[in-house]
Amino acid sequence: MMKRKLILTGAALSLAVAMTGCGGKPVINQQPSSQAQLISMEAAQEVALKAANIAAEDAAISATTLNEVAGTSCYKVEFTSGDYAYAYTVNAETGAVMEMSSREKNAVDTQAQTEATVPAADSATTQSSAAATAQTVTDTVDEEMAQFIDWFNSQENVNSVIRSAIAHFWFVSIHPFEDGNGRLARILSDMLLARADKSEFRFYNISSQINKDKNHYYDILEKAQHGDGDITEWICWYANTLSAALDEAENIVSTILNKSFFWQKTSFIPLSQRQTDILNLFLDGYEAKITSKTWATLAKCSKDTAIRDIQDLVEKDILREDIPGAKRPSYSIIYDPEDITAFFSEISVEEKNGNKYIKALYKGKIHVRERILPLDAKRFENGNLPLENLLAKYCSYLRMN
Image 1: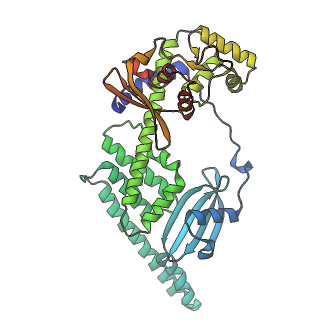
Image 2: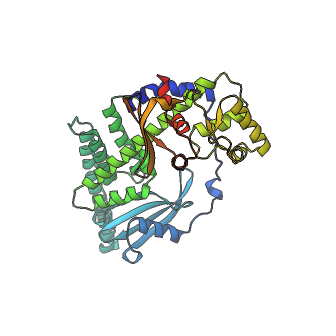
Image 3: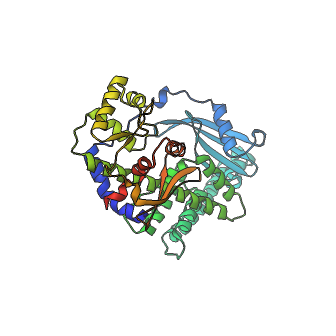
């Protein structure tokens, strides 16, 4: 099913864009970071210590600085605890951890210890020793990176997901740069997955999935780095995250295909720009019932205007009432004038990993599994969303064949 969807995606996406302009998604204007309320330095320190799972009394803050990273105000919190030195970058507006690193204090502290114990008069010796220490650290990183690059470019007979997980973990652990190691690690892991696909097109992005659960990502990464060398738990977490990314990609592909199918059927019907824009919002997965109140809010028009828009679409067979004669009517988009329920059997709605899915057998031979919005699942289970409308919304793309 996934393979067939991906083959169709290029043509469907082009068609959808051609028929709907830019897709109709609203743009939310955000305040510049300079005008946003920043959290305090102490709050940033608390966030960093909590993310590192270190109590305040067990840590020594060495520096906290406020910087701009890609136009965003961030605190860089540096501290030590036990045998390790830590550096956390915290978003000064949201309090979210953006980057983290840790390494043993031995290499970091050697230069400072040397300067503290050597007499000031012997400055030449101090500088020489400090330079030697720095060179040792640099040589170690260079050696580690050389090993990593050789392994990265090798052709090992290892599962691509496992190689991708190892590459990510290994690069972050080497930590060759002052900043950006996490982002580069995600790029490298994506590159290995792309190589394994043997395709110039990729329809999933594990990096965006990791960004949705950054705190858990840092927790499991640090646990593996400070463990006994067994990274099985990290690989399992990475594989599950990749599975979630694939699920998200399949959901996006289905949405695009269904939207494309709809506009193929209705491109000849005259619509106002307002009607087109609001229809595109719902076709893109906006989670709400189509009612006159919702329509008026989204279109920023009066309720009377919204009612006229909806009635016009009903008359043109683009919308239909979910429950005819309801006191407060809601509507569904008509993707196909034909009732497609006759093509499906073994229909059920199930939950997995916090998401709702509709499962069915199409034409007695094709197994279908589509993620559905929680609101749609609830309305269907309560009898407020007919099966015909539910199937049409998520499975109409199957009629493109």
